[in-house]
Length: 517
Image (cartoon, rainbow, N blue to C red; front, side):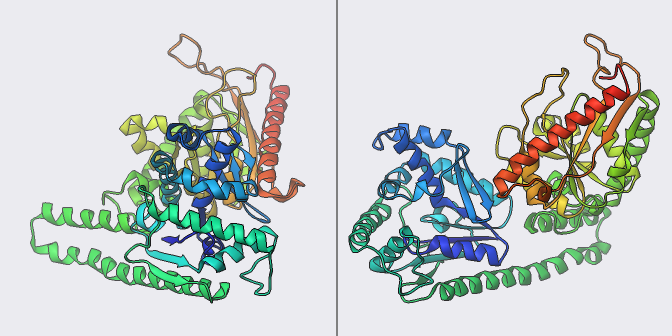
């Protein structure tokens, strides 16, 4: 579900969107903060805001991220916390100029849509319901009088909250300056050629001038709940329609009867949320269905294929490269979802991990680089064995959300933080996304290591070298054990602690098995 809240500056969009997201478990998307971040970077770098090409270049290069912390959402610009810096008067006065640049809006809209593709969101801004998400299930245009908005913003800058404290006051001169800025900004926003501020034709208008914050939130929540009930009502007859063709097709040719249920299944899957809806054998399930659904929900043929592959490959690798897990019980006796990280030296270790855990009744979702998907047969096979593709070097939120849901289902997510096979002892740069995934899935991180597999593939040789392979597993690391507060700090600490433990396990294996690399 997408909830789009539009309105002029100071109308309370951010506060309402935050509350709606929290109460209905939706992701909050602060689009205004994105434009403000670009504005801040332009101001810091001395970029002429009249030079649209220069401003667009800043937008394209800026790395804007959001991080949820104990005190609310944090805005990161190129890795730096700018939550407070983007709310200054100087940014207020210039953000409309930056956001009016077509190339800037193109970059920001693409990023906003990518976030929404990964799950349900509440987005607020000035063109959310008209341009960014014109098909949003709920559209709200929230406004208030100029004076009310200026007063709220002035109180906010002094650390108060006029929405919760009707008696809150602010400096009169400051409030007048904010009022002038708001009126100037309204004129710019509503008259710009690119995505002007206006209410969508099907938006619900709410004037909050004389309403309390709770009254506004309640009105929006009522719209959200009504939209959800409407979607549920639409889904029921659709589900019944999917079942009908089985009877109606009985008197028709076999080819036509076989084709219709598959077609209906694809339509149903397209409208279902990720991971919802049934997967049926030989019913045209897409790769996306396999990425989004739990492995135990896979159709019987796919589960049978996985069992055959695991038994066959597990037996062959055990014979050619006799592998052994040390402290394996730490991995096998865990029944909860967790992120498993280890060093990556060959294509053998992911196979061994998947096979070993499968024999112990656990399902593994290996995260693999999307470059492998260039070959259709590889995509087909990887999807059936639980793989989740990820685009390296980008914020692939869809892959992150899929991994998050897998953890919440109790599946194991296997990640190689080095990102590629490492054939030397030099530590490669670490892709720290595994800590974020574990945080989002409320799961621990389990370190492991392998030795003996690095030299399986010899330079210039087609045949693989035979030999024993050893793996070792450590206990799970909980975020609560790290001794730091704040989501960002915890993620950084987890990256460091988990990978240090991986190297320790590798070194322990080398001491116990001399000559194994």
